[in-house]
Length: 150
Image (cartoon, rainbow, N blue to C red; front, side, top):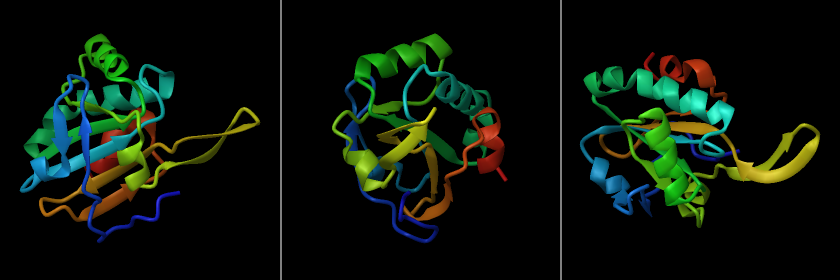
């Protein structure tokens, strides 16, 4: 789906997190960033993915990574997701899909025989200089951290 690939400069973005804080890619300059896009907060696959990243959060920090999630959910829904599952990282409430579209993860999908537009579950690993180190399009929700921390 996305046309971004390893070696590309990550698109600059600015969006609000679950608490209304402005989050920009430039906030992460000098740090590595795991930027994961997921279809909908509190659904089964998204919960498994977020909780797997939560359970391995210390390993990400130890290796110099920050973690940031993105979906088109409202700030309230993102906040509820964080509280319900004690997620230690911010979630962008990208309701206008600016970040989602910048990373090219919105498009046609099929689920149970129906076609619709939605977010393709995709993770970008971005280095300290804003360069994409990895693009994971076949996310294994129950073991996603191991796909990143190789």
